Length: 271
Image (cartoon, rainbow, N blue to C red; front, side):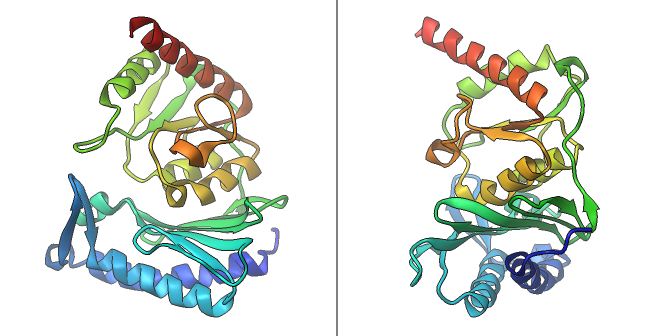
């Protein structure tokens, strides 16, 4: 087993503390106070409380770091080259409907690179973590992306745009293209866990559009440290620019990239 870095230990400690409140409130989900943040996009009091706990714990451990958080937004730190990227509750809609599939996601960014990250599923007690250059792990077990080499045998994950989100037609074109090629497609509703599952070999690939850095940062590092590839939909590294992500092992990644490029070319010809 690889020893966790001090950065990972800080994130784990903060996540464990925030998880206690999230687990408690999940058991009383019908009593949660909920405010509407946008069409079909809800944020709960539990979400805000968890973010406050994470902010306090991470700031106490690294007071010079800045923050990028889902609710609080960007918070400048004394060290302009270091920040935490935090999603206190990824899978909020699942959470509010009593679906037991949600997670806490935290990443440490230094000089523009993600250097450490965790994704913690409190209900399953699964802690996915990675240090750059030292591998990815689930609790104490080393992770590797799947070894499948054909789309016909691949199980993919994605996210489906909902009310108030753009790009329904492009997504449907992508879905149609993949449906005829793969063994199955799943939509679980928590992008951080989708990426963690790619790193663990549970999913063979994942694609989605329009995500935020806090949805992606820790998961990107996990996939890469587990031997996989994570890119934008053009195969580049500008994932945070538009929130487009494609993650898989090397062979499946290339095949999925070709499918996405084909869909894009078809849309351009039709326009």
